[in-house]
Length: 271
Image 1 (cartoon, one colour):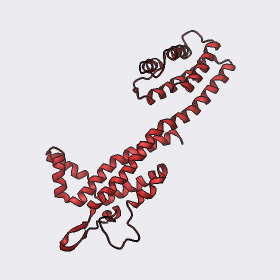
Image 2 (cartoon, one colour; image 1 turned 120 degrees about the vertical axis):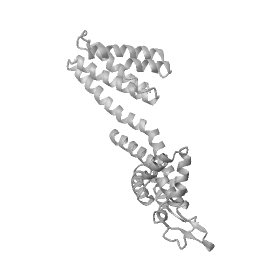
Image 3 (cartoon, helix red, strand yellow; image 1 turned 60 degrees about the horizontal axis):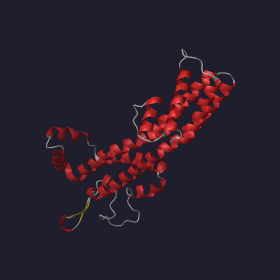
Image 4 (tube, one colour; image 1 turned 135 degrees about the vertical axis):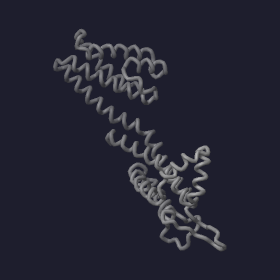
C-alpha cells in the first residue's frame, strides 16, 4: 500500500470522527426537538445564547447528515476492518424478519425514516432516542479502525521506506564504483537523515528536529542510542556535510564508503 494512500485513509478517518460529533447532535435534535435541544446547547455553552443560536444553524437534519456519514464510514470499514462490517451494517439495517418495532430491534434506518412507536396511553416505546446507543457503537467501530491504523501506520511506513532506502543505497554504491564520490555521499546522507527522522517520529521527539545533529543529540539524551552509536552518527554526519557542501574539501572514496556502510548499519540497528 502506497504511503500517500495511508495518509489519505488517516485523513478520512479524522474527518469521519469529527463529523460523527455533528451526526450525534443531529440525532439529538431529532428526538429532543428544537426547544429542548436548544436549552441543552445553551447549558453546554455556558449560557451563551448567541453561540447556541449560531451553532444550531450548523446542525443538519439527521437523515441527510447520517446517510452521508454512514456511506463514507461503510467504505472504510469494508477496506480497513472487514471483520466488523457485518456488525456495522446490522446497527443500521432493520431486521428483515422483524414483525413489531420495539426498543430492542429499533435501528438507525428507522431513525432516518423518523419512525416513532407508541403503546397504550401514548407511551413512547421506541423513537430516534433508541438509536443513540447504536450510533455510539458505529462511532466506536470507526474509532477502533483509527487506533489500529495509527498503531500499524508507522510499521507500514517503515517497511515501505526501508525498501526505498535499500534502493537508494544500492544507487549510492554504484555511483561510488563509477567514480561519482560526492554524489554517492549525498545520496547516502539523505538516506541516513531520512531514517533518523523516522526514529525521531517513532519516539515522538518533535518535528522541530530537522537535521542529523539535533536529532542524534535528542536520541542520545532520551536513551534511544548509546554513546558509541552517537559518536558514529556524529562522524557519519560530518562526512555527509563534507559531501553536501561543494566549497569544502573533496570527500574521499573511503570516507563515502564508510558513510554508506555506516548508514546501512544504522538503518538495520537503530529504531
